[in-house]
Length: 330
Image (cartoon, rainbow, N blue to C red; front, side, top):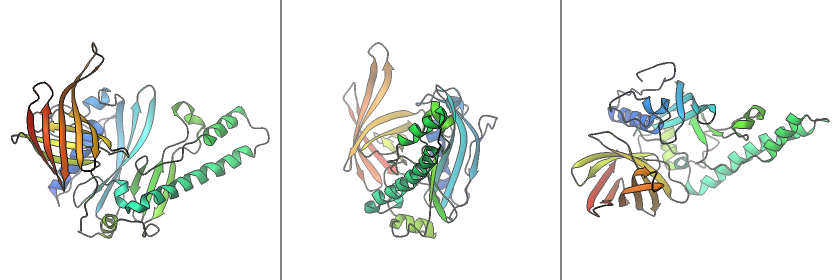
């Protein structure tokens, strides 16, 4: 993706078989990682390189790699560095369904009643790796202060990972889950284990896969309905203002955030709220008032998910006027 530089090497997907899928994946990647809307004016890396995204870190992308996967899947690994209080390197894996262009959510890959079991299998392997290393550390007769610090890190390590907490990517014949390390940034130099990689062959997980995953992995053209997390929608406000909406990850309590933009001016606007059943309630903030020490409200969204559509209203906070909102999954 241009402008390519020492600090901005970012993938731009080309998929001549299906330009719609190509556009959808590029939109997702650029809005999600750069908070940049394709086609907007200016340098796509302006916000991330200046620390002016919603998460405030200075972010640099140094390289990326397309991984070897089954034919229906695109998996990309991005390597870079983020600087907040401290600089820290990162690896991000993004997985897409090439039949639709949709981001692939890990939970959608498994039958609903199998999710906890899969999480348990991952947790068990991570805990075993940590416990085996603890045995090794504790076997030292005169442990140094460094070793004692390591023991404290691993004894207090969080291992109750869920599929929403961890990263993953597809390989040619296996799937790899990457759970976060045990140490915080300040203690990272002592964390010899670093991130925890747990892998399963596709065959090992055969009894757990959802029908969506089975079709995805087998090369089938059959497409199953997936969850609302990480999806793109197009539609209109008041029947005449075209917008695009990017719904981010839904959490266990139903909370989530979303970004939307008017297709004409291409400026990101954030929504925050919850989904209960099929009903969505969102708040749109206008700006943060230093004087009032709070976000000033701009509007509210009340809508229902109806199949691949979201139908409801957008209400102006000041005038209380209601405008129709109609969205359809991209």
